[in-house]
Length: 131
Image (cartoon, rainbow, N blue to C red; front, side, top):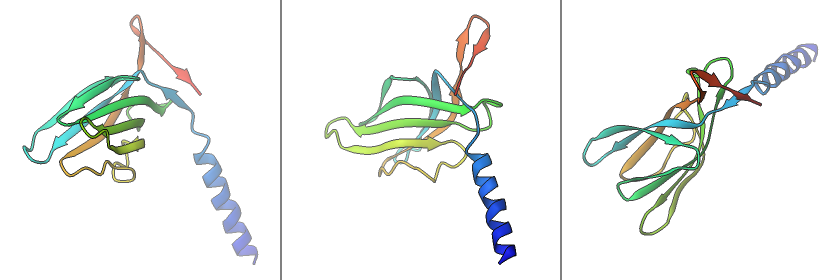
């Protein structure tokens, strides 16, 4: 019983430590897209609030966050992906750059991945809004 209690305490501390990561808002994200029919791969810079057309789908970038200690370590982007003609919602939620299969777009033709966030720039310096 003591061993189970000890393991529970250790696991609980690990989970709490993971939840306390400070994140910074980016001004947008770098997305990679794949057209499965043509095999074309393209990278797009998209800012928060911007919507881009990709074939017959629209990609709306709501927000991008990254760990404050390193912009290149991970990216969390909130995307809304819908059809242009049917307005069918294909994806709405957070995509994570380090685990693209965890929350992926389900579309027969297109794949979309988040590569990284784009930081806010103020002059020649990166301006970080930390939470």
